[in-house]
Structures are given as structure tokens and as C-alpha cells.
Image (tube, rainbow, N blue to C red; front, side):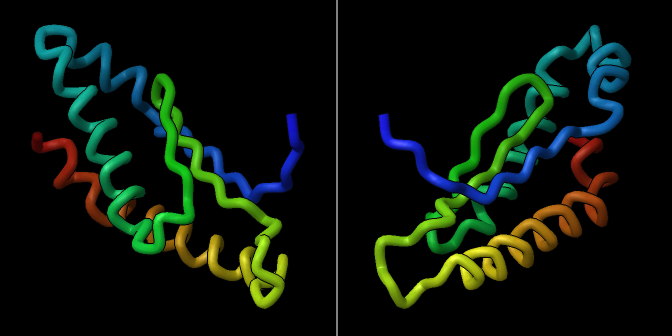
Length: 102
């Protein structure tokens, strides 16, 4: 197994457990909400270089820090990853009421 360096963001949806509990009569509602968050993270992944995975109410986003192409340095990857995560978080924060309507 080859070990590789990655930049990783671990996103926990605060209050998701309560949201699940509050929607016991409509259990697909929390699943739809989680899927929407995952879809947004994937939608912002226009270059397809970020890996988006989820488990429970957690979303993990990662990108390989070491690029085989010498022109893309480690620092450049970092500065691509940070704005991507900022955009994903800002979208989720500013549109949280929209998500909860579904």
C-alpha cells in the first residue's frame, strides 16, 4: 500500500442528530438533507480532483497534496483546496433554510 499526502476537510453537520429525531415520522427527510449537502460539495468540484465521501452526518473532502505534475506545487494545491472549502461552507451556511424546506 502506497501512503500519499492529502489535504482533508472533515465536515460535521451540527444539529443533524436533533434533525433526525425531530423527523422520525419522515425519516427520508434527513437523508435528503444529507444528500443535498453532498451534492453541493460535488457540484463545486468542477475539476473532479476532490474526493467527496460521507458517513453518518459527516462529509469528508480530500485532495491529493502531491501532484505527479511538477508544475502544480504542494502550496498551490493548498490554495486551491481552501477556497473550494470556503465556497462549500458559505453556500451551506447561507442556504440552510432552503435545505430544511425539503
